[in-house]
Image (spheres, rainbow, N blue to C red):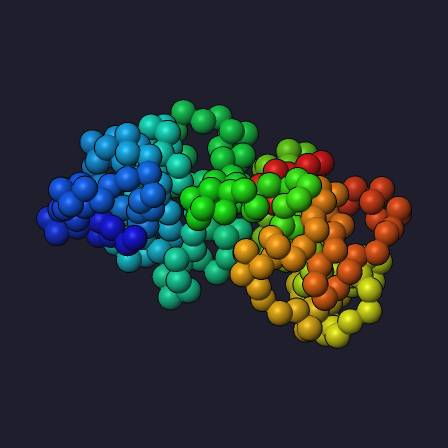
Length: 262
């Protein structure tokens, strides 16, 4: 729920959390969106109750000039997911939102090292986000029998977590949704995918292909209808990945869906 979204100096925003507690509605099922006005004690109460937070720093900073005490919440052990909010005030993508989040957390001060922070930021848009949404059993990790929602990026940094945080949309090599190869570099799609309806395009100077036959499904439908595998080649509902030893051996990019691998 959207809660305590406003400046800490705003009495109404501060009171919303207390009213939630008074109504006995602060539980482990509570997901607080924004929480920009929450105090240190309120974050401790949220942690004790097992509540979670969804954080949108770019939108908060544009609208209020301040954002959630996210570093403090992380240090307390509150589980946080990162979201871009909406386009009028938020980032255009989670890749951009991660950069805002990192700068903000570094400014606020956190006990995490640089590498730990990069890993946590990736988890905040994958495994932690899936758990917060109640989908942790099927999304958020690269593993057998999970939905094959996979992003492959160009490799520019040695550390895979750092590579994801530093990435921008021009680094995207392949996007698979529920095993369907929905978008990617022309060479990737041509090597991995069976024929289907597609649109050739150029993005950031790179020849890309988009699967125009793709039909969005719910997370539950993808979980029931897709056979996934940790390698990133999985059988989807429309575009079936084909075996390609050369591609598997190429090691071209960072593969991420909650756990990045070299």
